[in-house]
Image (cartoon, rainbow, N blue to C red; front, top):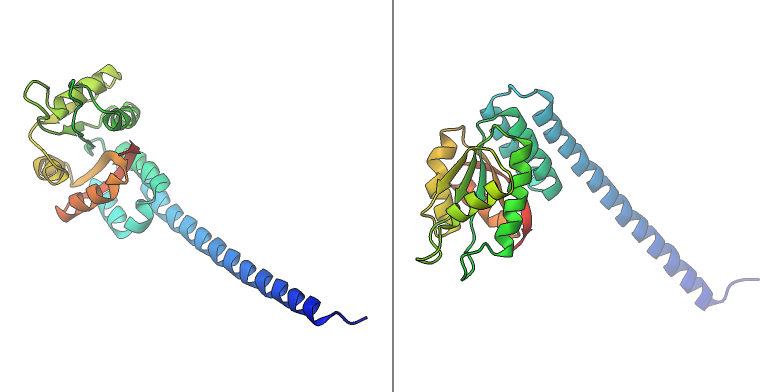
Length: 216
């Protein structure tokens, strides 16, 4: 018995929707595979040469693959890779305004937690903490971060930058130290601040990989 016109219309609509959904899923799948393949190339290149590889090589690899390297899960893997391969690459922790009682706000505690985990996995890499005065009777952000890292058991060399009052100044005041070590840094900051921070470092000619801790 032939289907009614209404049934035929519903059937045709269902088939069209199914085809469109399948094409969309197939497109997403291909894009995911392509992204995964690109990540494999980047991470594989970073990890395959070993710990003796030259820092400028890492910098050029990341520069050429920023779209992939900036994906959070990729950037965390890349952070560990570049630190493991070159003990001169610094971990740069960006400050945040202290509370009125001079204690670190949650956003800064989150960054310090992330920085401590990273530093303790790479004991030879120096840590740069950057941030100036919040209030006359408080330590600088950098001093508070230094103390916070020590309280978290970080034994690495910690370099304080005690003048910066903005992300641009964080970059300007640490650029010489970073460039003297090859111009590559792992920057610990927060989501979504990491996007602007990375751009500030790159505008200054420094290649940076983000290692995010918390949001803020």
